[in-house]
Image 1 (cartoon, rainbow over the protein chains, first blue to last red):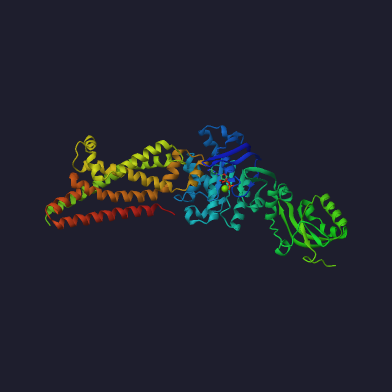
Image 2 (tube, rainbow over the protein chains, first blue to last red; image 1 turned 180 degrees about the horizontal axis):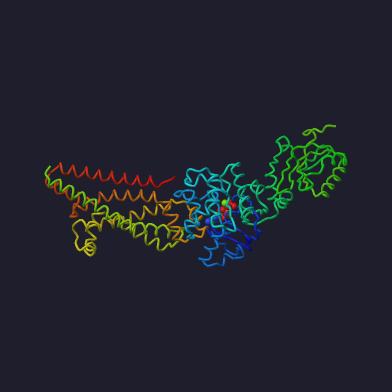
Length: 352
Length: 217
Ligand SMILES: Nc1ncnc2c1ncn2[C@@H]1O[C@H](COP(=O)(O)OP(=O)(O)O)[C@@H](O)[C@H]1O
Ligand SMILES: [Mg+2]
């Protein structure tokens, strides 16, 4: 539904040219939610603004609903944009218009009659739960309500595609959750295709089908969301995933963590679980089959798109041979493991 | 106070109101579009045209830097061409409008630049044309500050109209000079001042009232 084909964008500034996007190729299937995640300055805003040509790419093509936007003359481009809704971090509502007129804006722009507008807006107000706020002005609404108005406005022209530029970044976690649920609900009801950008992994977890990592203007990796959380491929992706599982080890362990093992250290190991692996009795296997002793330091299993994914950090104790066999066993189970480091014996206690 | 004096005060007040009102309307008719043109052609804006912008901006600055009394005299041939005479109320309207145009243009340009760029972006994303962005977004969003600026202009025009009156434009300024200054009739002078104060207060009140009606921030 949305395809970026070899998209590059350079900003020309007095200090030289900034490569904001470098040869981006991505594709969002119809009815799916694709999330782009990246740090500040990675090029996310540039990328999403290219999707409706608010920003014209230096090279490459943007294809939305089988139409190459980059080749359209101005009038056709405006027509095409009417089929692409967009929501923003700071809502961008007209402060001089009430809720009804704000939602009506795209329709008045396309010269829809006022009776037709009313027929469209009433169900939209209901959908976003703002029926009683029809006559209120944006200044009288909370952030979450403003974003609901913006969503209704984006849907008014019955778009096939919705672009979301950090739509929840100005909202508190609870409101974020309800807005993301609303987006999913919209996708299910109208079968719209959603491309969103965010710097928060929780947004990807909660509502995306696919995810792409943008780093220094490059799309480092993309994947199904469930796969992505279990098997982050690149270092940047791993950082995002581990940070999102909030597995910051306690200080008393991190301060003793060393890279090399010796006779009097224990390995600290992190597992990433996915799918069936997460539900298997791994710990008891390690104990019974490999005669290891285990101390669980931290754990977290979540369900993302019906996949159990998560991470477990344990300290191990046992002979070197058994340890190696255990590692091989885990690999055979498709469990991704990683030795974080080693800590001296006296830091972690193992009961006999 | 004699009936003739009263009549004189009433008719000169009406003349002042007429001059100010006509000049305000005319100046807005030209100043508002000029302000919009300045805004949209400025670098980084929706119809970016740096050369045109520089030309317009220079024109506005030159007009603004000429003191009103000098402008009034300098454009006498132009005024004659337009209204057939260089004295009287109608003739005064020409320099009054001309001096208010660049002021309104700048006030409008400033008001428009305060509009959040995100709104223009949102409208562009909806497929709005440049004209639609001006009418549906820029003007409604900046209307309150434009009206504040217009109020300011109208009030300055009350003062300028008195200056025009002093050199044959009629109105309260004319009365103040003829009776107050040349005949030492301080009562009439005082009354004209009071009327002017009332006028200024009235315009300010009107402006504030309209702004209050239309703002929803
Ligand atoms: N209009 C612009 N002119 C010049 N450089 C820009 C412009 N917009 C963005 N950039 C630069 O492009 C890079 C990507 O920016 P952006 O897309 O806003 O990143 P993000 O949204 O991920 O924070 C940054 O280095 C930023 O400074
Ligand atoms: Mg950004």
